[in-house]
Image 1 (cartoon, rainbow, N blue to C red):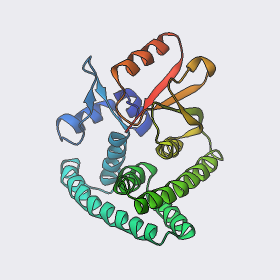
Image 2 (tube, one colour):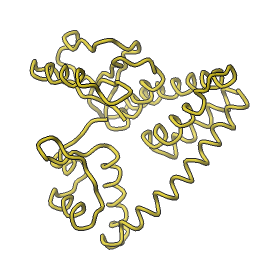
Image 3 (cartoon, rainbow, N blue to C red):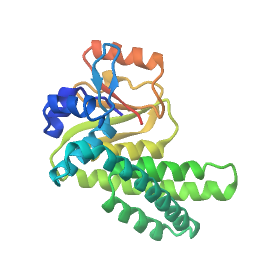
Image 4 (cartoon, one colour):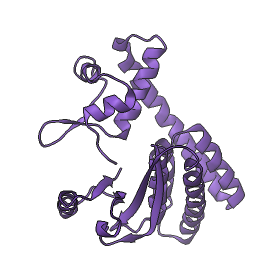
Length: 243
């Protein structure tokens, strides 16, 4: 997952930076991370929260009362995600691809890619990562349908305006998650192509002039961060994309 400066977020969300600072300092609505230099760093979860704050204010809620509503919403969403996880597990027990495909398509129409990946698909896949044959079969069925769904979403996103990007897996074996993250990026305005086979090294020199996203599956190591800095200094455009 990439990080954004307060200026980038202000432009993307249509909010004055002064307002964002007030939401953080005065009302406690935002908790951005800080860079080593002390600058605010926002991620996609922060941006989603900003959009939710905007919706409450647009509906007439005073900014001073938004925090309590956000906290109530978080609790309710947790219960909702648990329910959706159980519904997914129930669909998997039938081992019927068409039924599972319909369920995932319906969820995709009702929720954002980020919410479904983080709160439904990843937790269900974790529950199925047990070392016995039935769970592995169910997980394999789920992965096949998820990849199929993600590729269809990528194709659909190209019918709209967007920027071109290439997603590369770096030292990760989770190919399904790679396609899910491509879907997440496509919902952020990118026309994403996927290098389907993860690499030991991204080799940016093979893709001159292209916007590259690299997915590691975990927080990047110190060595990966050093390589990223080295490539940036050489003029390549790479962005770490991680949860």
